[in-house]
Amino acid sequence: MKRKRRIGIVLLLLLLVLAAIGVGLHQREDRGPLYQGRPTADWVTLALKGDSNAVAAVEAIGAAAVPFLARMGLHDRCHTHPSLSYSSIDSFCDNHPWIGGLAVRIGVIQLENCVSKHEMAGWLLSLMRTNAAAAIPDVIDCLEHCPSAHYVNALDFLELLPDISGTNTAAIPYLTYRARLDDSLSLRAAAMAFYIDGETNLFVETCQSLAKRAPDELVGSQELFWFRDVDELNVHLVPLLKELGAYSWLDASAEECVPEEVTVRTNKATATEEAAGPRD
Image 1 (cartoon, rainbow, N blue to C red):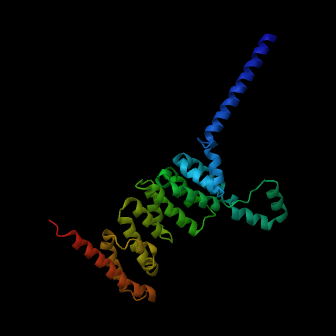
Image 2 (image 1 turned 60 degrees about the vertical axis):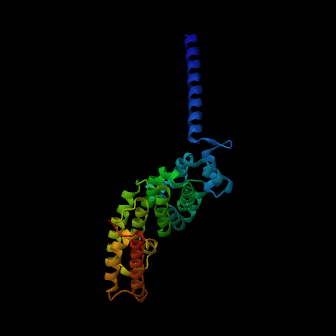
Image 3 (image 1 turned 180 degrees about the horizontal axis):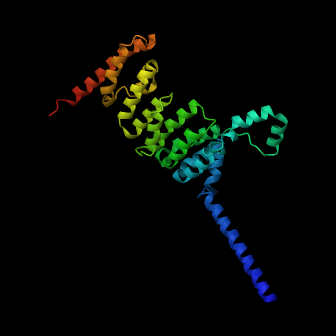
């Protein structure tokens, strides 16, 4: 009986040792590949804090660092539970200073604005360009669910999508949905979709919608200016701008801008056709 008990204890100890080894290996794998003797996760932690050496290391690690940037820089509990966002917790602490202050001091609640992490993670991903394409769903998750993100943050993340997408069209369904919401980010979303897939329909459709809703905003938009030289868009945009020029309710700046835009876009299209020569 004693022998069996000893054997049982030995087997139990052996299983515990094996479990500990397994956990250790799993944790090591979770930390990512080593770079200059340090796990990827350590470099990402430092890079998210702005350490210039770590930023260079993360850029050198490349695609292998992307899952860690996504998990450590883009994911946040407040995306799933908005009540845990910085603004909600800050408001609670203002309204209940004694309880809130104590909870923060002992670590029960944490005052951390995830947007600053998102901004740094987004910049690091942009350095990797299409090597960071795996993070497309994570960037979209921030755009959709981060309660602390503001207009400028949303613009930054929309502009990040073509940077990391290249010709990968994974972000197109979301950008299409975003463009059709008819809000202040619609035209930017449509422009980013055009950068990715070169399809004109969504951008033209969004311009037409904005022309009805806020023509002054359309005429003065950066997005319209970015694509001044794109003939396949101007085929549709020149007639739209001419129609806007007849509106009596455009503000003075937009009214002055429309004829010039029509002339420039028409001349560019004509010059392109002449340079191309006669068609068969």
